[in-house]
Image 1 (cartoon, rainbow, N blue to C red):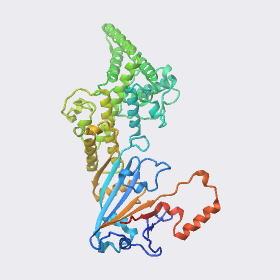
Image 2 (cartoon, helix red, strand yellow; image 1 turned 30 degrees about the vertical axis):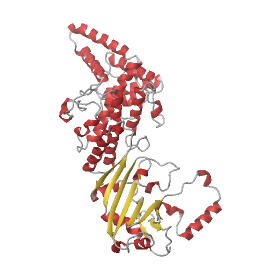
Image 3 (cartoon, rainbow, N blue to C red; image 1 turned 90 degrees about the vertical axis):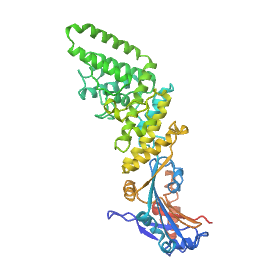
Image 4 (cartoon, rainbow, N blue to C red; image 1 turned 180 degrees about the vertical axis):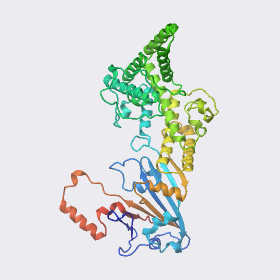
Length: 500
């Protein structure tokens, strides 16, 4: 059978065809559900026929060696991150027997119950929060004494700071940006003024100086030596008279935030100090030089960078999860990095969990960040694909329960989370897919099971495209005799009818 699927008046309409390979049926007849079931052993003479259809949206590019049947496989067999919509319904055998096989998917869409399956990414390819995933890898390497962001971000093509000149330029760009935001007693000095903008815009009005420092510099340093150098020239610039006055959140409790607040206090005292406060100003300058010497040691600079990275990622993940209002911080209490401390500061202390406890060890905090990233990616995918707030909340709570289990606490697993959807929600979700064609559909009656999978284009190497043109023409003639062209493979279904 054939049915139009596509064609909006602006181009050629594509037809979907169902090619039955087993059992043998006449090609010139319209195949119905009853025709198939009568030729399958184990089908019931009376009873219920169950239909289901799957719509898969892979979020990462499949490798060239991927199986053509992968998009129609069971959810747990799909590679990489994905969003999959599964719809199912049932009918009596007498009513379903006369239905054309090509109308199974439209029938399921019109009357089926829906379930969404979601799996997050564990690699930057297809991950909704790929930058945060790379930042977590950089944090782990810093915690384990590795070489910072080199091995994690270089493969993803991120702009890294691999030399002192690049670090100096990045610091200058950050200070110039902070000065343009109004937080300056004077602009960046000429020695640090960049000749060109330093990197892409990753910050925003809601991100303070500490957050942008992590995004622009600390997470991009290839080694502890470059990180220490960048932090050193930044502290020198902040401590000079007339230097930049950074904006720091009041709720930020990291050592870096306290350090930058001290520079703001010293800058304010230089501008408004009374004649009798010269001794206090000298003491503050001496203390600032002592702090600069302290952070000139790589070990202390790396510890400061780790604390900043944990705080920034923690805040970002909580923002992604809670921004729609259907999930609260209390729901995430088992996964919070710092128990008993509100991540939003004293103004929102009522939103913090009531439990109190000591700060976990660094590696445990990193594991909790991994778990929070998985939950945040679920929330991000739900928002991108128009899932309602109730669906988002149920996905998040499932993920929180999963990562609470001791054997999942490291946050390295990428399971599939499934939630039932209403018909309206499934329609919104399907509208966000690049193509609304089903990846597969099934028909079940008694002991008979029919599965139809979408047939995807054959992959050909560039070297073979210009070879044996005559053979290609012969192959095309052969396909025309069978009733289909190679161009139609993307919209074809192939029946797979297991016997018994």
